[in-house]
Length: 226
Image 1 (cartoon, rainbow, N blue to C red):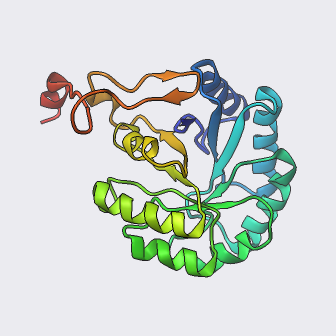
Image 2: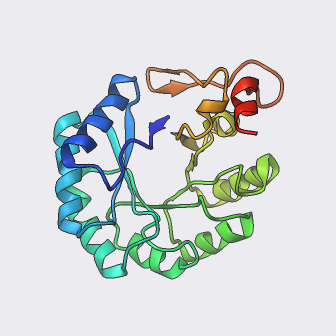
């Protein structure tokens, strides 16, 4: 499992480092940072500060949230390359397959996409153009468990690893059943409504041994929002 959610573009460098270190202190061995809202050289400096703080043993990824130009993304990827990142996520709008393909073809940091691709057919477009090295499907946005199995089968055909996006309580089952899955995102959007959030032990999360998705809802918390 990799940490995500404590690394906003709004944070100062010190706050960004502190948020990353807090994930490491929680036992995670990988953390994703937000980039793309600043000039590329500023983002490189911010990520470099995090790398210096956590060392080489922690896997780092960056997410640009679909807000970059091709020129800026190229400059950013080139500047980040010495920092040994696992991927640069969604530098461009999900519809722009060719822009992602051009960046991925540079052979630097792998491009990751998928959270906004709502069907296996959309992933197939990226496969045809060799536009990404990592896919990030989301069961809540891409057709549920059945849709994710279709995406996984396509990923297997093309030798593309999977890093499931968000909602770890649901995606953990898919990841545990798929040897091509390498990561599940820790994005605790549902934690306030869950009685037993997934525990992370040594950077690893395991699906609950209960029927179905195994989520135990906090009924009182849900009633408070209805």
